[in-house]
View (cartoon, rainbow, N blue to C red):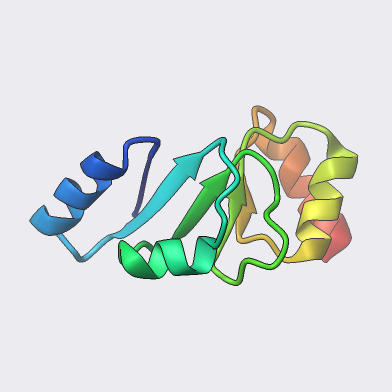
Amino acid sequence: MIFSSFNLASLLVAQSIDPGFEYCYLTDRDLKDPDAFCQEYQLAGIHPHHYLAGATVPQRIWTVNDPAVQADLFRRGVAGIFTDDFERAQQVREEWL
């Protein structure tokens, strides 16, 4: 299970209650150094609104409904995407793989 929130404080509280899950920061901001940010707060990854080049932590991008953008993100190696059309995104992912 992955917990994701825009509220970092909420993630840290949840993490202190049960560190056995993955916690990821949901953000629409550019993070200067996503890897350092995740390391500092012991996060499993980030969920940004757009792809953050250079980050090595898992990224799950939100909300991506355009099949061409989905394919590009899969090519870039993102851990996943948030979408309103799961079936179409799954088809794009399978075609790319």
